[in-house]
Length: 499
Image (cartoon, rainbow, N blue to C red):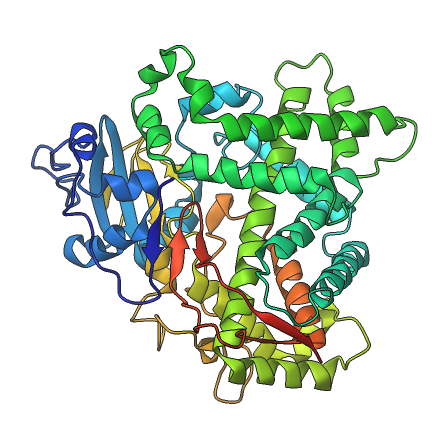
């Protein structure tokens, strides 16, 4: 497992300790070409390859100051450009969104069932199939409650189950991560399968374990090597050894989908996203150009689970950690909850308008936690210019979101937890342009509205019912994250005392 410590402070370059493998993979050349009208960006040793391969943001954040807001790397034969700062990221993802909306092809995914008309949504190449699936996902989520009261009720009911599980801890020290994962997973299960799992159900436990295994595999060094040199996948048995957790996860998804097929009544309206997708499969029968097929159904469902669960639960884990580290902020949030919601009524999304401090805290948690510091990879589909630099077609783009969320020219205290970043002098909530934890442009996070709903409702429900503190006799936990697949809090425990 590849991991690193990610400090909420100025990063330190750790790249001097190159391994021999780094040197084999890294091509030592500057991205330079014939002198002419095109302005070519700074480049050099791809000594930050390990940062790219393992998605470790520290070296890239350091390199920003030395190389500028746009610089190049070369990873074997793959050109890579790193974009730093709001101006460069926004120009590429928003102003040139059509030209940067593609994803680089990753050969290892062919061994997980990916194909020309079956790529899911998140990693799908930019084109008609991606448009079809993104449109379907957004429409179906709306039809099943996104932006409507029904989904809000699902989340608040799950929040009640989560609070009950916290209450079962009876004020004893515990780690909240497992319960947060199960609660958020149940929201996704409600949307995709129309059901929730009890927290002790072996299926949800297995689902979470395999999700974690799969995410670790995404950032394993061997995985990055075979992605850089796809010919290695022809070695018999290697592919199965690279993604065993993800293969097992897909098998479980297949089982859950099979259960829904057995209970489905085609004469009735769809019960959930899986039913709606199966209706589209029936409509598209005989159309070889359609992305509605059984192979793609499993990938779309897997995308919703893997991306929609871990990111939200990790952010909530950061929120609770920051509350026990900043009890003054916790008290102010609880005071606002008491004044607007009280101790009996469940929180509602409509409460946000009257709770500027709580909303600011949720936003600041996302900014400070910075859980996906380099976003997802993009690829240019034509030659473009970014900040005056020429970027050729087929270039992989790394968008350094951390350089935006921690920009010292934008944020008053970029490396500290400071909810006032999102409040004006009168205490009113102010959204900042540099707040882009969900990325931006055509490939911005599909589940952003759902994630926002979950973060607000789960967070306010928990603080409505409990006061959180560092367990007696335990050291104050660190706010320095650990980077594996996401930037997660270092393992910690808390006490949840009923209010």
